[in-house]
Each structure stands twice: as structure tokens, then as C-alpha cells.
Length: 290
Image (cartoon, rainbow, N blue to C red; front, side):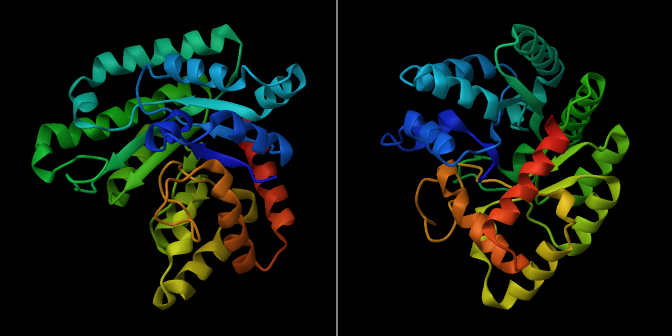
């Protein structure tokens, strides 16, 4: 229960020194979690992420390690920071090598290419550190090119794509249409119903994060319409931990165990038991990744 399709495992500890990685893995085991996915943001960060994971499982029993290895998945991708965009051709070569090395090792599950995409949330004081003045025409076009190259790489290796799209719906839609490959997730979905229809019509999954629990009363009907519109075979849930902790944990450093609150919020809107929503998401993870 309580699959989480998108979190940043090492970043949880970086953001909160009190976070216990091993205890989180035990939470997954205790809840019989079907799918838990650690998301990459740098072309070669998989090596340090695997090292972090192996340290976290080192104190588990052999039976526990076996259970975790079945449910735990890794993605590898390039988040569109300015330096990565500038160096995109070298970054893509390194990304492909990282994926090849990881898959050939056969040690752990490889889920998808990503997260990758478009981000036009100009917030220099925040975690992204991006200013609009950073985006000259060449960087703007380079961001799109970096995204398209990663979608094409996913197509080449026949794996899904984890799409990051923030304040950039039109660019995101144009890029995925240009790449011509519609297999993956629009993660941490932040647009409205009409935008969702366009992604869904192309075959994409929609993943909802804890941010849905922040919905103001004036916007609640719109949120209900959105969540009820998403086909049951296209809905996923995530934390994006350590970011976006759901109510009642809002304002704290998020962890994947908080995904329970997002399931409870969404299941109430869908008028179904939490366990039923868990089964739906598990099946969608099975269909997409296995």
C-alpha cells in the first residue's frame, strides 16, 4: 500500500539531519508498499544515490533487503538547471552512459528517464535559484532541446519519462509532441483540467502530490473536477519528498511516509476507500513500469 512514484531519497537527509533512511525503508516493508521510486536530477548522480541506498539497507535483515529491492526503483535524468542546459550535449552523453552502466549492473530496478522537462518558475530566493534574466533565447531554446533529447533517449531504450513541468505548459506540450513519444508521467501536476485533458489524450499519466491538499476553498470544486476526471488507469500519487509536505505536515520537511495523507485526501474526493485507491495506483505502476 501507499506506493510513492516520486521522491528524492538522499535529499530527505540533506534537508533534515534527523531523517532516518533505514526507518523509511522499514515503513515501506511494514505497509507492504508495492512501488517506491527515487528520482534523479543530475546526469551521473545515480552512483552516489545507489551508495546512499546501500548504506540505508545495510542494517536490514536479508529478508528485508530482498523485499526492499523488489519495491525500490531508480530513475536517471537531468533537471533543467542553467548549467546543465549550457552543457546539454555532454550531459546527454553522460546520462546515456549512466543509464547503460546502471542497467547492465543488474543490481537494482531502473524505472524511467527523468526527471526532465520545463521550469519557468522564476524564484531566485528559493530552492531552484532561477532568475528570468538567466534565460536568454539560447538558454530558453536549450532547455527545450535538453528535454526533447531526454524523451528521445527514453524512446530509444523503451522506458517511461518522468516530466517536470512548472509554469511551462505550452512549452512542455510542444516538446513532447516534437519528440513523438508519449509514455510516462506528468509529475506533481500543477495545471488545470483543460491542460490535463491534453496530456491524457496523448497517453500520459498524471501524478498528484501533496500540493493538492493545499487547495483553497474557492478552488476546491475545480480540484474535485480535475481529480475525478483523471481516468482511474492514469492516476498516480507521489510526495516529491523532501518538498511539498501535505496537510497536516505542511511546512515541515517532507518524507515518503507522508504520502498516506495525499491518499486520504484524494480518496475522499474520489469517494472510495483508501485501500481501493492504493490498489488502483499499484496497478498503474505495474502497467507503466513492469
